[in-house]
Length: 513
Image (cartoon, rainbow, N blue to C red):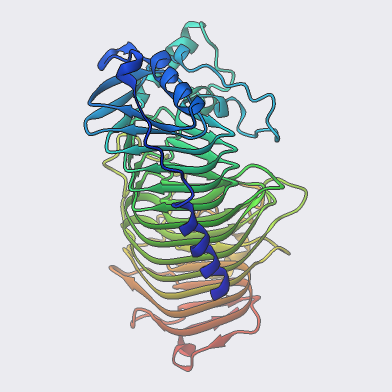
């Protein structure tokens, strides 16, 4: 990524925070009849305050100290919901309090089905809107989800997509904003969602700062989702999610997320901490992910995936610390959907330090990611395209990863003479474990062109019989200054790989097949 592109991105996201119009008009929900007892349903009273504030040109709708129960609220242009200290907005646990929003006039056909129509706080084609303060939004998601589950089993309300539990399409989110502009969500705590916590879709100029998100009440609880939106900053957030932490998605082939900065965040996840996809029909462009602390995370610290015909381009990942995390990073170009495979190029990953445990890193979660259905040794970092669609121009610099070792051929064995047996999985769900047992412990790279490893250190806490690196069908490999365990030989395996440039001091580690 060029310096010009990076600077342009920072300048644009900095403008987001000054795009809002401050209004001194305040509308206390108590004045509109809201009760702070945690039992009275306040949907109509709160909505009346929002409607009046918007009709009069905008202002702050104030939630004072207390517990305010509500169903779906429609946030309108010029209105900011402000939660004072000890104010709690409680989501109703009655599914009937979440009516579907009419999207019949939307400019594009939504790809997220009825799930786009269920949320505690909704905004549609609104401008200059916000949710801020120091209070809490509690979705009461477990009770809500179990209520939906009971309705399905009694036959009162059937979920046609039910599979072991109510589907995402019938469980309300906490925040859902569609086709909105100039959004500010700052300072609050959000807990206990029944589904994805918050989604910002086909929107622009979004500022998400200083949030605390604790979303472990039920399944599919992504912490923050950005879908095909532009000019986004996510900063100083603390996310604890029973699914992916911070996710960029793309549901629309003619749309993509552009100019996004994710920085100074702390993430714990029972899936991946920061992830692109898996929905990737359009793409992701000009994204900076920096200064992220990841801990106790089941899958990847950073996962970049384009599998539905979309693209990934101009991505910077830097200053990542991952402790007790299943995988440092995962890069995947596949072809699950779309007429043709997309493309994946210009990704820089720098200044990463990761520690991979031998056991499950999310063992203390109530809801843990599903265990794999095969025996395996510890998986390496995977960078994988598909035949004739290569991942291109990748830089891996100043990276240190510590692996536990303890690999056993009795547990699983993929010898280097059987590299052709590693499945392609071209149209499969993307995950770093998707290929089964792999023949290396540090990095597995396949179908890539133009990859630089510079100042990379791989540590082993215990022995591992596999080589550190396997390159299979990789062109233009450059390796500068790598540090590997000293007692190992043939640590870099090259198969069908061309135009390699290696430091002289590592030639003794290399074996060509």
